[in-house]
Amino acid sequence: MSAAGQKANQKQRSAARLAAVQGLYQMDMASTGINDVIRDLTATPLRDTAMSDDQGEDIESTQPDMTFLAEILRGVVRIQRDIDPLIDNQLASGWRLARVDSTLRAILRAGVFELKERTEVPSRVVINEYIEIARAFFDGDEPKVVNGVLDKLGRRLRPHEFKPVP
Image 1 (cartoon, rainbow, N blue to C red):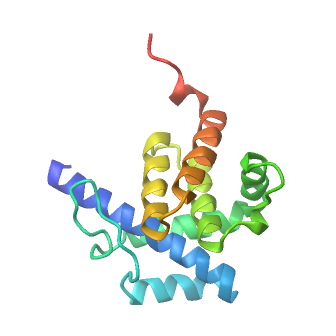
Image 2 (image 1 turned 120 degrees about the horizontal axis):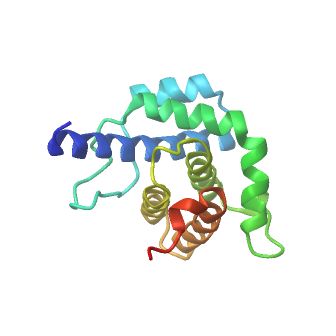
């Protein structure tokens, strides 16, 4: 694949991650079914976010990779019972995932799903992508929370990717 094709594919995957977070939020808040969410996200462009790629181009104007989007949504639903305890164990003492903002919860679930199941995507890429999504939604410490939780879980789930270079 050419460099331009790879860049376009990366933008489509970034857009898919953003859309997946929006879909997980919708499923959480409105109890919308996964098939309805996928249909809605396919028919409606991304809105109400300000996320840019590393070149400053808007991600929200990019058509998401719909296959990747559906894989994230279906994957989170399929292994959510495994994901949630992993996140709970990384949160500050006294905090449970149920107390976390719904958008932040969606970001963490999607990120942990990718760390567990999408091993072809480097951990650092996954972590950085979801930090950027958190920045699109939050101005406070939430991106730091995403970084801390996903970094700890990345090191635990994929230790070989974090070994120091000799």
